[in-house]
Length: 129
Image (cartoon, one colour):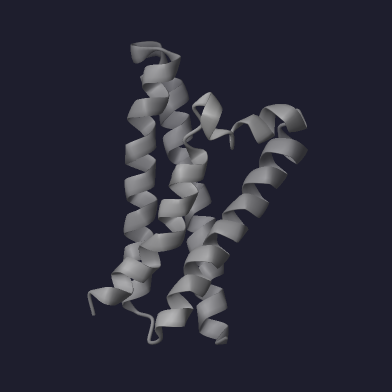
């Protein structure tokens, strides 16, 4: 693959982490005291997912080859997961079982749905060119 594509995937994943961190702080500081725990997550999820998908959509518009959109989308998800897991497990010392529970859709986790949308967003941006 092209060097530019991998660089774009790295930037996309890092930017998604920053956006998620911002909305996570907003959820904890504003939405939770106002609405409570489950409602705060349900309010935050579409906001953070939309913002990240917008970044991916815009990233996909500048890519020349269709296969490169998958590299950017899936590479961005991989970068996000590396940063997220390092942050949660290493810096915050979150227990592994608690971290893995954030991926369990059966228990109400929304994170995997957002990751899937993030992976697809550059592809949909490419189609509009």
